[in-house]
Amino acid sequence: MVEFVKDGATGMEKVLLREPGGATAQIHLYGGHVTSWRNERGEELLFLSSKAIFKPPKAIRGGIPVCFPQFGGFGALEQHGFARNRMWAVDINPPPPPPFAGTGPNKPYIDLVLKPSDDELKIWPHNFELYQRVMIGFNGELTSIIRVRNTDTKPFTFTFALHTYLSVSDISEVRIEGLETLDFLDNLQEKERFTEQGDAITFDSEVDRIYLGTPTKIAIIDHDKKRTFVLKKEGLPDAVVWNPWEKKAKAMADFGDDEYKHMLCVEAAAVEKAITLKPGEEWKARQEISAVPSSYFSGQLDPC
Image (cartoon, rainbow, N blue to C red):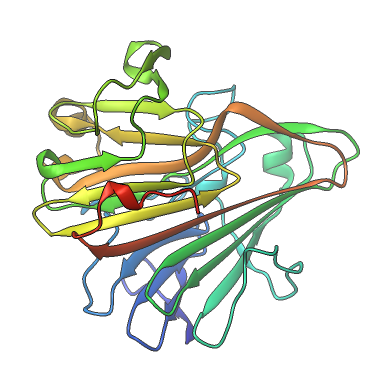
């Protein structure tokens, strides 16, 4: 089921997706932003700050912001680019889906598109089309399919990320598997390059890292909730891991002082090697997140 509604608190337009088993997703047209993902029991799986601001030009703190055409401070634009704080449109005539984007009667979806206005062209002078298909699968998995098309007469280069905020019970009881032995850029140390030494990533202080050349599957294990998020991705070789911890959380106006305990960002990204598109070329990527029982273990992190 696909339903178009207005948010009662903010008046903003949003789309509700509901699959037959009861799982749901909510997407605000502002930012093309997934702001809710619930399983068949109604449990919220994404983190959304209680202080999130749903008002332009502020980006919404939580959910899945779309970072384009720049991730973080990797360029001259505003932090994470402008796509996350612009109004997207429902695409009534989307391009044919890429091969990995199959839909069916059990997979409700919505197609959104962002094209530059004069304001965007003043700060980033490139004509483009940014498409996003958001889909709920029959097992409740949440899929985002991204494509960027160069509609300009000259090449352009960009970086990209799906800035996914996951809801966790207690950050100190969470571990990430699948990124062991990989190199990463540490944003807390001026993007210096290190190699991950642990057998898993755990958390006892602020973390802000860009893992490079990551596998197509990553597991985020929440011991208290006995639940594992499995993140699968294509076309997004990097993975950003972020938790602001106590000091930085208190410094953010749109983030609760103690909310860092209940969130973790694991972001499928293309950052280290920027993407260049010639006129008429298209780039595509895919992210799928599922929540499975905690019996999931790292030995299942095969490359499929």
